[in-house]
Length: 68
Image (cartoon, rainbow, N blue to C red; front, side, top):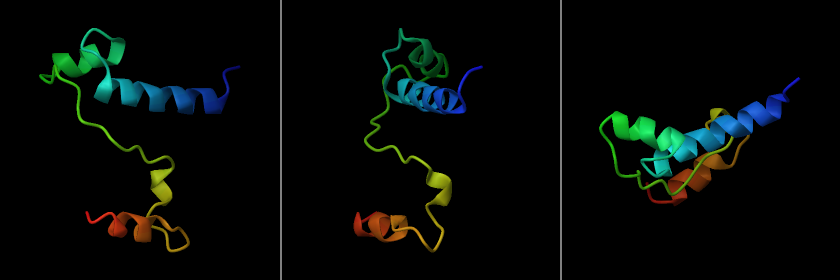
């Protein structure tokens, strides 16, 4: 049985490869086929971002202090 965590991490890595991978990579080629041959300028990845806007997290203060 494949671990839930392995699947979750693999999906995260695939998403990063889609955004930043070479146009000849597995997921970079999908991005290129969608009309974006150059990698996106991905700088940050939020892990567990579905909790970011709940009152008990520090994400909101961190986010707004970034000046965005």
